[in-house]
Image (cartoon, rainbow, N blue to C red):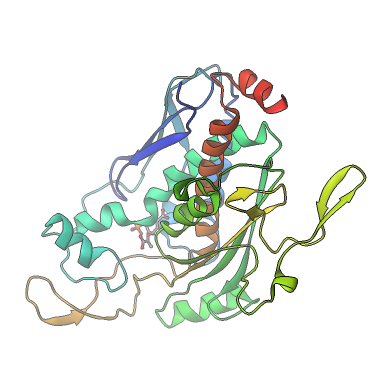
Length: 336
Ligand code: EPS
C-alpha cells in the first residue's frame, strides 16, 4: 500500500449530506464512533454560533472500510446528513470578504448560491470527522491534542461579553487560537526538499481553513535576538531536554520531540446582519451585501477544525515514516 493518509470531501451546506473518502488507514484500527461524534459536537459548540447549530446534530455514518468497529485496510467512507437540506433562493449581492465575487467569476456561475453552498464553513464538519479518524490513529502512538482561545476581537478575556456586543451591533468577530500536540516522535517532516518541511505543510493545512489569515509556529521571533529565541539543548537523566519551546516543536522542518504549538488568527465572519456596501452582480447597482443566518464568531469552532486538519497531516507523516498495512505492523515499525 501507499504509506499515505489522504482524503477528499464532497458536499454542500444545504445539500443532502457531506461525504469523505479516506484512503490509507491501516487495518485493525478500532473506530470509536462516539469519539468521532464528540469531535463533531465540539465543532458545533462555542459562543456566538448561528441557529444552524441548533438545527443540526452532526453525527457520522461510516458506510465502508470497517467491520465490527475495526478498519479493514480498505478506504473508509464517512457521511454526515444535513437536516437543513433544501433549496435556498438565489442571490446576486456579493458579500465582501467571502468567496462570492472571485468564485462566481472563476466558475462562471450566475447564482452566487452555487459558490456559497461549497465555500460555506459547513463542509468543515466532515473534515472534523476525518480528523477524528486521524486522531484515533495518532492516539495509538500516545499522540494527544489540546487547544485554547487566546483572543476574541480585541480582548484577551470576557469573550462572551465581546461577542454579545458585536451581535447587538449586527457585526462579527475574529480572533486567535492555539493548538498544542503532545508526544510526537522526533523526525516527522524533513529538511531535504521544500515541500517536505512539516512547518510548511502545517501552515498550508491551517491557512486554507476559510477565514484564516495568519499561522504561526511557536513564538513569534520578530525582534528577538538569537540568544533570546533559540531553545538550548541539555542532557539530563539520559535524555536530551529543552527548558524552553520557542520553536514550537519544529526545527529544520522536522518535529524535535517538543510539543507542537500552532497559533492562527481568524478574520471576522464576512456575513453580517448589518451588511457592508457592495454591488449587485446583475444590476451593477450599489446595494447592501447578502445576509442570511450566520455566526457572530466562530473562532472556537475554527480551532477544532484546525486540530482536525493538523491531525490529518500528522497521521499522513506518521504513515510515511512508520507505515504498515495493519496497525500492528505500524506499531512494530514504530517500536523498532
Ligand atoms: C456552518 C453552517 C452554515 C453557516 C456557517 C457555518 O450554515 P447556514 O449557511 O445554513 O447558516 O452557519 O457558515 C458561515 C458562516 C460561512 O461564512 O460559511 C457550519 O456548519 O459550521
